[in-house]
Length: 534
Image (tube, rainbow, N blue to C red):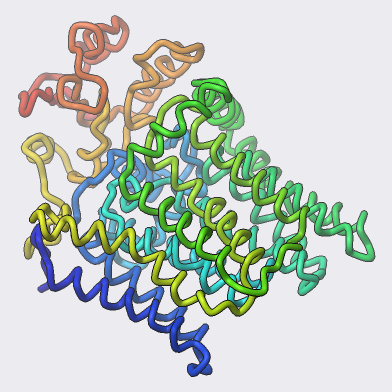
């Protein structure tokens, strides 16, 4: 069985040797007839190889992973979204996708969802590569692939390796980018393709509503690109029809299932409130400190900077790239930075939204300043240098190379709290956690008893707090969950028992006191069992 300690020098040396092999391909590219295919194959192998420690680390890296797995567990038994599950900032499509690993027999755990995430990562890289090839040319695409490739392969930053709700939207955005690039290059003007582009754009807000600014920019560029179409007005109408298809279907289905008000109140309005965290000016001034929160992201910026600077020293400079395309790249990057910073919460995983706009900006610099230049191999090597230096420094200083240490047991570890819960309940019973500790759902495999699997929005003050709190109470009364857990004191953010525990909320406290009995406290977490079958 494969396992990794904190200092697997041989493993990382093999990974960097493979990366060096990718760079070597650029030195030999003129002598390798199948160079592009080999480059893509080795790139995919590199990402898979370097993600192995993360895949085998079947434990929570980020609380969002447990949150989204709990959603999937619940939807597998109670499939009506916004009735049984409210993903807060995470849209229904993102959550339903988590059913795929379980359908394939992989179950509901961290390894399963990271395998799905790996599909989104490799797919995003592939569609980005194809997009750059269509926008510019194959040599530009090949060189432009390296910065995001090496970053996503070698990063161990938890915010970039855990299964985040940004990974599926990034994949969809890159699919949309590829579709627009084909229109831009006049390689596809079929109405079916245009309609499907609209469908992909329409899917994004229901995967992660935070990416709407980027969707709007890509949609605008699609309309501009369609101006060359001989049936311009008809093609735009087809694009709009495709873009509306998913929203109309979801709204109609929500109305049919009786959750239309929930869609509006908790997904649209709730996210608008969440997005009101900071002004654009404040967000701009925060960017340097935001970027500095991740050393690996700074390495990524450094690799992009090196390759862009080196490209200017190549011969046959090409200064006439499309002005419109340059404007689109800049606007897409601005939209990504806006989406990443607007909430006022500088969660590093939001920077995922900036990876490909930055890479496309790098591609623009590469294209505008190189044409079969002799420095292409040197530029490829330059991309690897920041990551190689980081690895060397860690090895010399004997700092952990791998933070995801795995043993021979790949199962999800079960906490003392979950063991106590499972003394009284089965995985088919419903579980409610007051506070923020979604990991208990993963450890017990028990579905949620309330739509939200954490109570942060029922506790912290905001315009819709009473509405969230009332829904939480209504779900308790309707679903009669077998186990109620108060994790305040041992949860994310919520640890002040006098003001945040369930006793601080009169109606909730009264309901628990009348319907549940206390069965024990473990790890500062209290467990309550429903009195009788109801």
